[in-house]
Length: 180
Image (cartoon, rainbow, N blue to C red; front, top):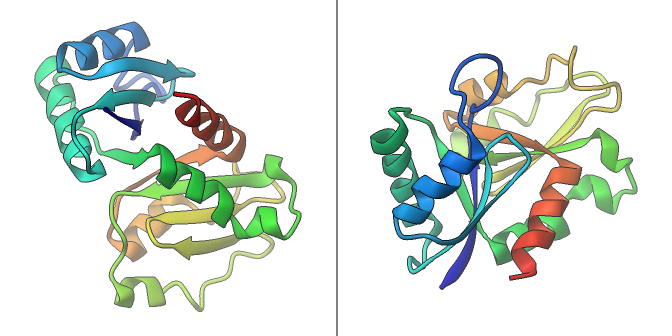
């Protein structure tokens, strides 16, 4: 069985789309996934399954959530090795930036070249980003809260949904995925 990390977009944020992690684990286990584990309360799921490709797991988890919980959300899935590659590819870590200021937006798919090129001339004061494939590496040296570099901006520009995770969460998920 292959190990996957499923990143659920927009659950347990505010009052909407509240999902108990125990219910999520049970639902995915009933859907045929093995060793289903969650990390934190924000939709980070580690699971094992017979499917070999992330896209098939994404569709399966989305359908399971829609049928079992009545919620339609985007799910971004990475294999354990893809997540390890995310760790190795962070340009801000390579540059020695403070990990506490770093995030990764996991995109549903690789943006079209034309959409990606639209980002090239965009600047956000001290905030920085770098697009690499299906990941958008983000740096917020003054904090995320008041930044104009938002997920909504990237989704409008790239025409691809994404879900953002703090760098310490990404590193922990990669560590957990590699341990199985």
